Length: 520
Image 1 (cartoon, rainbow, N blue to C red):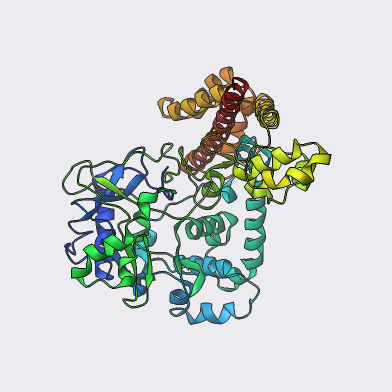
Image 2 (cartoon, rainbow, N blue to C red):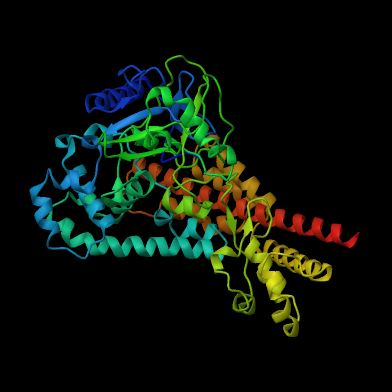
């Protein structure tokens, strides 16, 4: 996973650029805990690169205790609809004539209006370090969309694109009235702005559109789990820190953080203990959402030069498709992953469970609701009323019923994999081939070799047409577009590979259960 378009440093000039961003942040009142220096991110945190584990992120430079305040971003530094409107009377008056726009549409217009001001914007140094593109589903073209292969994922991408275009068209008149520069009026600019808001905003109590939090958005993503260690011993933790005069409100800050009215700032806290030199296990599939070649965003390595511990932030509970839709990245081992398989209509009609609860877990096990629904469906109609309570309580109805259900799921999953245009092995090979593209002098040579292995996605040079299909682009622009397209295409291939892997795990799980029951 790469959170929100982070990449490795490429030059001293770029490193200086990030240092200037951190200096700007310090002047704006963005500070680390009191025990840290105000220079850069202080002596407890630094911006570092974690290859294969999120790219650019926040690193621990000294031991950090669970619950410790890490970063405080004052309200004055937050970018919100209110903060932007308060500085722009013209913008505020223009918006009153368009009351039908949603809060997110309004924030998007406000962000583009502020970008339009260039260096005159107080947030200009921050804007310079935002990604130049996002791989959210709304940015997917036809090639990447079809590469997902699974119907509900394709539908999700198409829906995201349609929704984005509709919202852009609704706001277009307002943006013209505000006299935004032509490049900022385009759908591509709208996708960039909505991608920034979708992937980088944090919750604030006074605006459902959220806020952009400079420096606070450097934290990489860690998926929330049901690990009891994340929530246990809250009372003990409070007692241990009573001498520090922490009140109940502060002592319960064992999540990642939030906006705090008493200090008028967005505060971030350590969700676990971090040690210097400790590299967390990789949560990443690999770097996915990298910046375009035109980006000036870079990484500053940690002051002590060690392999430091990454401080991660949980954005919420998301499946991989949802992460792709809102943030533009994936997690290989996502504990919240859900894979859906097609079910017959009568299976839904017999169950009181909502459709979104009928899925397969990341480890291949059918969900509780899916097993309940299928056990009831596999029961003869005349017996369903009498044994329904067993099905809904999650209890196996009989050995024969359980074997029948497991065989049905296994056969369904096997048929799904056989119907796919590519296999798990082919998708793995394709991901490897995409990673090797940098070894080729031009895209055409790579496509020629890849076409010898894969037919469908390379038929009639689909990749080349999609990459170079925009007239009027110069060579550099075309190169950037190509990289952005291939990044999204790779994401699509990785998503379908993860989907198929879970389906294959489910087949193994069902086979093991059947074998176990058959020997009893």
